[in-house]
Image (cartoon, rainbow over all chains, first blue to last red; front, side, top):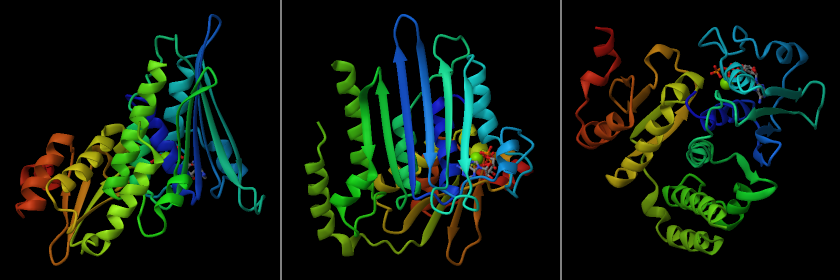
Amino acid sequence: MKELSLNILDIAENSVKAKATVVKILIDETENEKENTLKITISDNGCGMTEEVLKNVTDPFYTTRTTRKVGLGLPFLKLAAEQTGGNLKIVSKSKEEEKTNHGTAVTACFNKNHIDFTPLGDIVSTVVTLIQGHPETDFIFIHTKNKKESAVLKTEELRKILGKDIPLNSFEVITWIKDFLTESYKEAVDK
Amino acid sequence: MKSLAELQAIKEKMQNKVVLREGTGDIRVVVGMATCGIAAGARPVLNTFVEEVQNQNLSKKVTVSQTGCIGICQYEPVVEIFEAGKEKVTYVKMTAEKAKKVVEQHLKNGRVISEYTIAAHKA
Ligand SMILES: Nc1ncnc2c1ncn2[C@@H]1O[C@H](COP(=O)(O)OP(=O)(O)OP(=O)(O)O)[C@@H](O)[C@H]1O
Ligand SMILES: [Mg+2]
């Protein structure tokens, strides 16, 4: 993928497909003399994976999908992380083994100094696309740089204001979300 | 700075036109958003459809939604257009520019752009 934000969109789509009601996207950047890293965590409360699925999931020739024989989402992210000297970790508890506490967390770590680091790209577009396509799902998006928040969006809070009648993917709301995030990033840079 | 108060204002404005807004959804635009689609550029295609449908005042009759893998990965980004009483139109290898044209010519004026369809690519 050309941008990590596209990998994030793709991995979050897995969460939605797993019937998650809450999907959390965290991006943590650490920049100091010793370290220049980016960590992406996508976690959900979806159906989770059995150990069997989990064991095979970063193998591109494994998928539970039926329209195509290979699953590419997780292998792509793994490759993107490992080619910078980073790594990918997946923790998952399936609905069968954990009745209430099921779900999946995918964490990818990147070294930003590495020549093969893929830039994050248009993350605002990714968040907007997810909400546009899945207005009923709750998304939590938090991007921090050296522990300071540069952008935060929790759809649950927006839903509280909008009430039941106005879907989150109404054009006006989507536009507001896009502008809100774009401005948050601008302010974070200005500070 | 954008504030939550602004969102409250959006809500009030929209509630007043809720009845007007309810589209009949005559036409459905569906964009494939599985890994293959996303990697090939489906995100800007989708967002262009959303914006242009609004810009061309078509939101009453057109809904834009996302789906998983349509099963023809080599043609991604793929967009399917469903319209009651008509045969499905499948546009392939889409870009934001092509999406803009499809909104204007197909969705607005009812003319299918055959050179973008899968039939044209298979031929
Ligand atoms: N968050 C998740 N919750 C539950 N199962 C998951 C999750 N993410 C991945 N999986 C399982 O792992 C499999 C592989 O995922 P991956 O994204 O690599 O490929 P895919 O979604 O099957 O196909 P695609 O190439 O379109 O992404 C999925 O088919 C699904 O069974
Ligand atoms: Mg996937």
